[in-house]
Amino acid sequence: MTTSRDHTVTKRPASDAVGRGTASPSSWGFGDGQAIPWEYAPAPESREIVKLQSRYGLFVGGKEIAPRSGQWFTTLDPATEEPLAEVARAGVEDVENAVAVARRAFRRSWGELPGRERAKYLFRIARILQERSREFAVLETLDTGKPIKESRDVDIPLVAAHFWYYAGWADKLDYAFPGRTAQPLGVAAQVIPWNFPLLMLAWKIAPALAAGNTVVLKPASSTPLSALLFADVCRQADLPPGVVNIVTGPGEIGLALVKHPDVDKVAFTGSTAVGKQIGRAIAGSGKALTLELGGKAANIVFDDAPLDQAIEGIVNGIFFNQGEVCCAGSRLLVQESIAEPLVEKLKDRLATLRVGDPLDKNTDVGAINNAAQLAKIEELIEAGVAEGAELYQPACDLPERGYWVRPTLFTNVAQSHRIAQEEIFGPVLSVLTFRTPDEAVEKANNTPYGLSAGVWTEKGSRILKMVKELRAGVVWANTFNRFDPTSPFGGYKESGFGREGGLHGLLAYVRLEDR
Ligand code: NDP
Image (tube, rainbow, N blue to C red):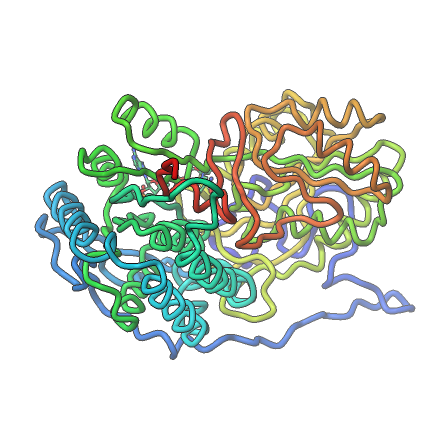
């Protein structure tokens, strides 16, 4: 083993795939059976562009301030377990202060500003984000463990796109909801998770500001840094003080924030358990609420699907961001007649995924974000094996330190298995089969969640039928994990309610009055 800690359930030599033998990059023969060592030259992105402070305070009233609590915590690089910086651990008094400042900014400046003036600030923020995109991409990768090619090519461009998009709405609210006048709600409390820290910030802050609200945002404790760099963008854009406030600290601070009586709107993305807790905590308070929670998406492949294209979609569906994606295609439903060739192709493809240094531009699968998440993934992989599913993991050497999981595939999975029911939130794919479209729908809908789904088929009519019958907020056809600021995103059932993105996302931040 080259790893000091084996994070997977089966102990084995690093060069051997687990499960039925499949060619791995290090064992592919070359005609005469000789193995070629496929070593990739390292292609690390420089981290020089990021100037980390040793300590970050709270961002309140346009300034970085020390927490009144007097406490700090450390955020780590999950790829190395090295500390990155100390961050303020807000107390309840800091939340009180941030909400009071946001309320003042709403009354005195932002809430009164004409839409065209708000738009200017949002356009400015979008432009600065683009200008500083490399800095943000590197910082996001350092703090989350996600591959640099994803933060650089997906997260940060989408972040800027959200600000561009909602900037466009700020002066057109009178036309957004025909016959109705849109008024801002007031102060928005926003709590976001660690899987897409800056993107979730953008999903929440851009529509809130476009509609004339002010915000207090709490990032996840394991990934606060990109939100704190965003504070610098707000300063650079001369955003009026108090319009955006960022409060770092543990979950209990998130709860204190959403419960604060002077908050008008709550937006949360994270686990279903915390979403329910928030729902209970603010029930009857009159606060507007949107919840974007977990998922257990079915990615359904019919026998007429273009297989090679589907393989790429399946891989993107579950291994993008290490599978730490609420809408990840974590249940693969394959039509029985093509299950065998598809699984073989999938195993070959998995063997080519490069797992390792998230800052390396060749890396496909980075580090798991935090130790608790790693433990949860490992526990569910163990449960899959114990319940009788067949495990396959390609050979790959994992770095000695940090939080890592090999790309994992389970076949022979039953509907009742925990790995088919529970959100794993990691690079673990469960493969199930079906015979008829009706069976596919029944199996896909057999989950407490309803966030997303994927359909792979050549037939347009089948796509339309499936879209109608699948109980999921988003259904992708012949693609997966595509996002666009103009397109609403959100779930049903235990995946939450309300939509983010598009006009629907704006609706969540306004009160409509008859003209
Ligand atoms: P949480 O739901 O606990 O965390 C999400 C955010 O909520 C974080 O900012 C967290 O703060 C905050 N928070 C935690 N507890 C409370 C509370 N009682 N009231 C208000 N805010 C709170 O997710 P985890 O990070 O613990 O991940 C657990 C599981 O949740 C994952 O394994 C995954 O299944 C799911 N998940 C789903 C996500 C999604 O996008 N839908 C995103 C992240 C996780 P802090 O970080 O300080 O604890």
